[in-house]
Length: 149
Image (cartoon, rainbow, N blue to C red; front, side):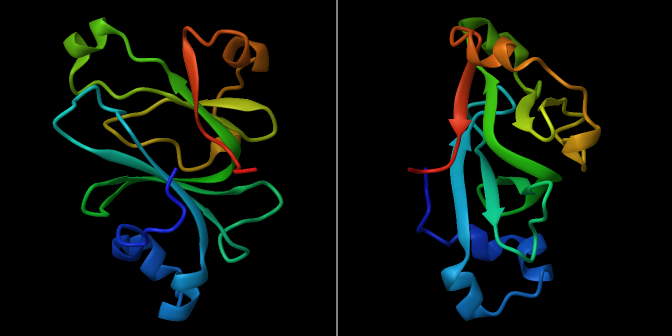
């Protein structure tokens, strides 16, 4: 999990539109991890979770899906950690270009089902998923992003 390299963070258009100064960006708390969301190992996707009062409320923070250049593919609000996704299987190679669901906390675990690479804009409106369906089946779901201790 990246918490220090701000190169992609500073290239994200939505982050710039939040109105941060350069000094604020240098001190912004965030988590970033590379994940394969589109079953295509030729492309790179990153989850970018921004933890700042400017973009977080009582319901959660913003979770962005960005590509390697910092282009935002999706921006979801009202997200709390942890974030889960399905584990990859050899059969996923046949699903190249098919985006995987993300599972986030938003007043219960929610499934963010993608449509053309974009996830719902508000996690609290997504369908609820029983917590034990995710946490008790490590063969199907893996934890990809959580708070650092």
